[in-house]
Length: 551
Image (cartoon, rainbow, N blue to C red; front, top):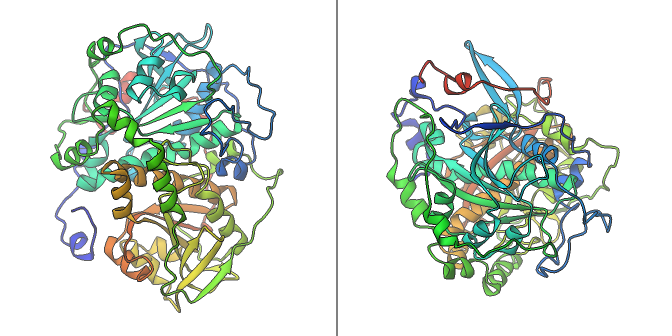
């Protein structure tokens, strides 16, 4: 229904109403806000180590009583997360790092990319209380004024844990983040196709979050198994406008004291409310098909939540990851070189600040070793609740245009033996640009990586919610590719694509797969200034008046 083709793109009569562009910030009318400190710590772990998530990845985490040991046994299990630490997590995940002025309008660019720079994702914080600095409660993070607004006061970890099937990762963590999508903000431009963008845009933020928590030696667990309606009511979200899509439990430690669960959780859920917010636009266009897709993949009761994370299902995901990919069409195989971690390389904080979306590539070749590092480290360390950390629902295919030591061609990344398999040779450089909606930017890229999945098989195992899972995992992987590219001195840019043509190009090898995201990487043809920790404190008037005089 939302697949792109040359015909659909050329014959689309949709146009953007710039006077109705959605506001980039969610602003509450009646809630007070708490300014976050801006003298927060800079994440200093080596970028490649942090992005690969080796610093906090413990493959034996299925044993809930075992404490993860990032970077060996050096984790200080008595570490107390401060408000300054939380500020660092939020800033390097989704804070404003650049202000760009175009046609007398200021655009506030963030630490993670977003399709169309529309930033549909909102982040909510569920905290046990951080000493005298922050009371226990449920908060909304506003990047515009770099603040928290209290939605509920009190320790609600047990309630959130019950919504996620009595999840002990949540009830024992001092902080959990809930990611939501404000649907209209992205649908304004991408219409029905924007549903998949919910998970892409959340995923690239989560990639930053995983890297930063890894640098801080905090283990993060990603949770997609929860009761959707209860989570939305818990946050006071307006129905059919904004929806919960992921929970990230931070500093998971099952040995910590569990919170008191004596209160009636169901009564608290029913005590729902919707704090008033300023509208995003003069008019919001409804897309019922988006909400039909969302509703079809909800978890409606505790039995369904338990089924999402049951051991048998994890074993099936494990088998999906281990299954042999067909060798159909393989011409040659290249073993990927491995490099040791460079402790003197760029740190993850600076890698995030350097990240942007490249607007022009130079066509110069990149080293094979660099491409290898990007492929090897982008698909690992994604600690989801429906699978073991080392498994993946996705595959990487790529078009190589200019990589030293590799011939031009279409390749498959074989993660089982750390090689890339040549599927198509003697290619025109224009093929990657054509597949990405005939954009010259992606013809100029040194390589374009296409993230794909065997969606039918995934849906057979995970049900309709498996679509969310694959898109989220693809978004996180894309975020890692972005960060790894900038950590190695390259640039990167994401793209949509002609869905069926990508499949046909990589067939017969990819004939049963679906395309999720495309990322071009290469050497930029210009020098861009890195982002920085900006002391942005927009006023309410600036936030609700962004892009127009509408208020």
